[in-house]
Image (cartoon, rainbow, N blue to C red; front, side, top):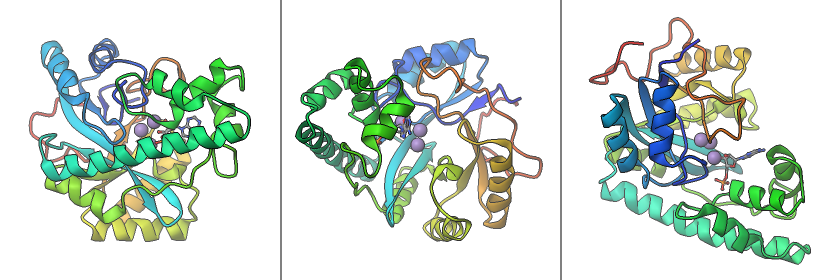
Length: 282
Ligand code: AMP
Ligand code: MN
Ligand code: MN
Ligand code: MN
């Protein structure tokens, strides 16, 4: 069991439920020695998390998780070790947040049409200072008694074919990778086993990702089982991609995903942090 590193987490800057500083304190209590904050389409939580990590003596990796549309699929690309001051990156993220806000209104409009009023306003309230994402709609619908839990509410209302689904156009793959590289970061495909892609399509994605300058694959994820970890380690090796590891922690409400509660990278993997400076020993 790896309890030292976690390179994929969320805070209230996007759809996580802990404030950036709270998240870092929780990481320290969980014996994490290197933590990346990777909020969806924003780096707004990075400065606060970095300050807290410095105070507590944890190695901190500034990150982001960029929403990408590839064909008809939503794909998430992590940027690790990015400079949040990079203008090109920030312009890209801002365009995604503008789009997000439009989509949120559209989700609200569609739910309203189906007899569920007030969802946009309710979700916006739950998003607070952070950006708005589908989990805010999900939590709002749960408070309205429309479903018992996150899994059910997504299945009934927020996925393809359901009342609150909006076919989305996020960034394209090449742009997302180029923003991350412009900011001095490494691009990593998040939770690769979670996309509804055949093996052939996944390998097509990996080929295009490598050609665009992608660096890594999230081989170990809170969303992967043992078989998926083994398969992804194989693909990473085949495409010359480094291997990353992250829980995709969103807060204590999902106790089955713990911070840093992850298996080690499979033997023979090239860790994404291989050439990083100041990495604490695993
Ligand atoms: P968005 O970026 O607004 O489309 O929201 C995507 C987020 O919703 C993901 O990052 C997850 O946190 C969450 N999510 C997506 N699908 C599900 C699901 N089936 N059950 C629970 N949460 C989900
Ligand atoms: Mn999320
Ligand atoms: Mn994701
Ligand atoms: Mn994530």
